[in-house]
Length: 106
Image (cartoon, rainbow, N blue to C red; front, side, top):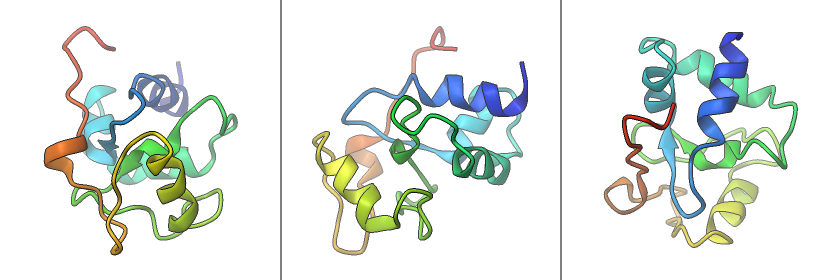
């Protein structure tokens, strides 16, 4: 499986109402130093309705400034529709919404 396919498989595991970080996804797929490449893969998401790339944020909980499908406002709207609170500064509280996958998730 390619790097991108591994990213997409991992991101599809993030449940509604939770977020993951780029670094977390990179670690999950065995490429811990590849968080930027995870972002690139998500920017090239071939199935936006299936692969929930809007659930991935940076290590501070900040939304993507150039979210591939319309900017941080669209990403915020998608997250809020799933019950995730997004601050006016486009930051998600990771203490509250960070997904904690079990060891068997991937």
